Length: 248
Ligand code: NAP
Image 1 (spheres, rainbow, N blue to C red):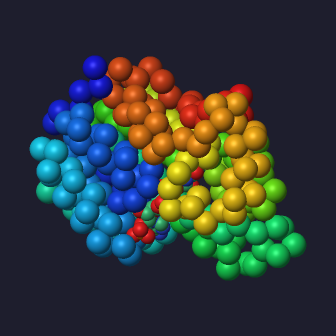
Image 2 (cartoon, rainbow, N blue to C red):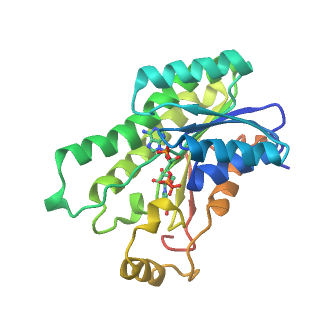
């Protein structure tokens, strides 16, 4: 089950946190994984080395998802070099948390350029290839707060909600071409992104989580693996919530 042998995957922000777990999981299932990163080359190298040590196939590729020319050049190069592109996981994301009245224009611009435009540019470049192949899987990493809202995360939650609209539209546009497009919406997961939260904020989040614990990156990766697999061929336009019951 969930055999990705012979498939090629790109994981944006695949070098750390949830993205790293996704990269490792897809590689363990047989895919050649291109681990994208923005600036932290050491983390990307470490992820690739871990995959190689486990007998998997991977390489690291730097590009900024918010730069459409860089995205297109990188995805074209991967296609040319590896001969196909089966799976795109748009995982790269940033959070600049702030109450609405303190939000600065540059924070809105940067968050949307990475979280929303980044996913659009990656999907656009990948879709051209996947349509010709007549098969493909695109998976967007949204968040529980896209649907539940969360004080202090107006900009982030708006950007994550945009990914749900993007996914539903792309699912309708490309289902007939054999490409599925879905969302995984994680709850509170232990990564660098959440490590800076105060103990008080963490306590509040846990109080709202029926599972009574934070999630692990591997638990998100398992959901991504399912949506990336042949077994999920009739699933498109869906939001798969992996949140310990935090939003049901
Ligand atoms: P993280 O630990 O902060 O890692 C972020 C990753 O994204 C890094 O690999 C980073 O690369 C990359 N990245 C950032 N900006 C980029 C850009 N412009 N171009 C290319 N890569 C870029 O984040 P995480 O917690 O694993 O979160 C991963 C995804 O899940 C995000 O979309 C996040 O919004 C979502 N999510 C997370 C949680 C959670 O609780 N952690 C909950 C819900 C949703 P560099 O290291 O090179 O900068």
